[in-house]
Amino acid sequence: MGIGTMNTIDALIDLSLKEDGVFNDITSKKFVPADKKAKAVLIANKNGVLAGVDVFIKVFKTLDDSCKTSIKKKDSDLLKKGDKILEITGSARTILSGERTALNFLQYMSGIATLTNIFVKAVGNNTAKIYDTRKILPGYRELAKYAVRCGGGTNHRMDLSDMALIKDNHLKLIKNLTSAISDFRKKYKDIRVEVECESLGEVKNALAAKADIIMLDNTTPKTAGKMIDVIRKNSTKDYKPEIEISGNVNFETIKEFAKLDVDRISIGMITHSAPTLDVSLEVTIN
Image 1 (tube, rainbow, N blue to C red):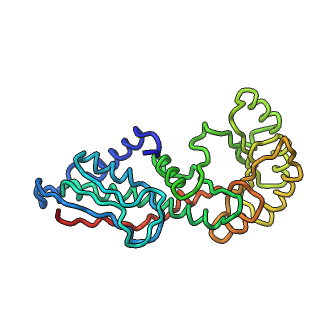
Image 2: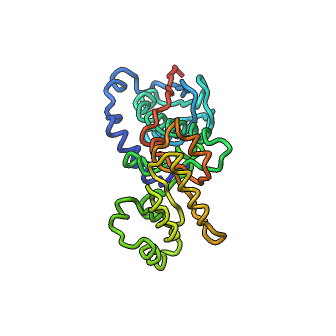
């Protein structure tokens, strides 16, 4: 599937099916004959970027492994209104019962991929890459971060163990940043250290500590530009930290931030506020 840990995704699908009462779908059981077969076509109702085809299929395979699918579009494909994404044939009851759960996953993931792609395109030919954050509904992290990749974005750390990210609340508890990072690197030589900065003074401290990545948080393009000048002037052949913009990034500011000499722009809204992509499953008698 290429998304993440299959055990995690399988468990999420099982939980979602049970939550929706799929195994006791009284409507389908009482109004649709058990031996009735059907075909359904998954159709895009709006333009967007596709993500979650394998998860969509997995929902139905979990209910009935004999279901057959014919894939017309794959993850990361650009969708136009009216495009056929896939066809599924099998038990009519299975298709009707699993429809909502399967659509929920695919619409959620495609919505994230679509919004991510909008920001990726807004960056244009500039060097900055669009990154996600950990602002994701618990349990859906692997699916959301996969969807970000489908939209052309890049994943920030998957969890707290991937990288050291020293944020404002950490800084309040650290007496000497340079010493703290130096001590950290003695034990964790292969783990990168990022420092969040909201002022020029914090930027200078992060430079002195030789942070691998300096995050300019909740700033404006104008203020960020001044901070970036200081970072680049203090960079050397042996030490040139990556620069990340985070906070205050939206449809209005993204192009201005992208013009700056930055490597990364992290955007929480691509995972926590992406609207679902409108797709529908149309059933026909087989």
